[in-house]
Length: 178
Image (tube, rainbow, N blue to C red; front, side):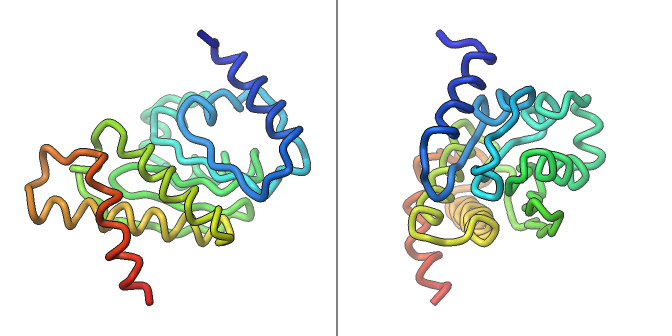
């Protein structure tokens, strides 16, 4: 099993060697970067999707500090990593490396379920793989994820939502963008 330092070093080495257009980092990959300097060539090409606990660990802040100033925390991480940050919570802040910010307050408590953040990362990865710019892809992914949660809650209630149900909602939501 890899410890956090090994994950960070592995992630940093991967980012140095791979010349992909964009990277989406979540959970341990994000928190492992707290003591690692990212390669200059990756600046602006990374999107991170932390929740409050992961952000607190990354910034070495108390969770309460992150909760009081989620936007400030997201901006601090975006500036440090030169990455787009989706600061997940009851309201999700999407922040660019330059500090631009969007707020999505469209979500539902039903999205606070195991695997939901992984699903968001998958939606986001699909959008950047299709060539959507990271900041726009993150804003769209956060919106679609939240809307999928709202639709599922409307049909089945706030509790009991399963992460595997979210992707089935995405095609209909995308069609509405047309």
